[in-house]
Length: 164
Image (cartoon, rainbow, N blue to C red; front, side, top):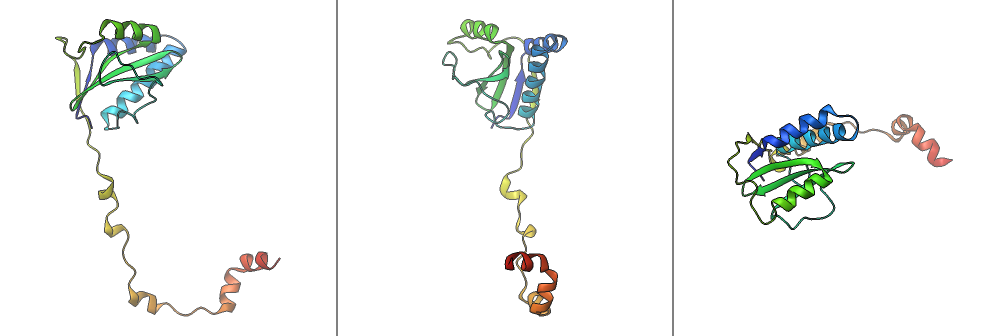
């Protein structure tokens, strides 16, 4: 799991430009912001959004999110950090990938916006034993016996439908 999320300033600039446009770019920007928000809240990289169907081999540990209508969000994982490096149309992303192929695009002098990722609680701590107490034998013995007549009266709909 990544502990720090870095966002390149060009991503923030491109998202603002995309939001100012109509239709596809605007929807893609909203999806990108949703993915970034999920990553900031501790979502796994593969669960934050829809990844592109094809894996890109030009840069190691690269994840491309499909934003729909030909738009992509490019991220890169390095140790415990995740870098959001580019967002744009499919063609612009392809050009960016060609430019940085076999390089380390996250090693840059440009100051990036950084976020500490929220830690999620482990699933086993959510369901503690106190939620599922064992039934006490004493409580079961205290329940009164219920006759067949009373049961048929309470569950008459079930009994009548079963006989039909």
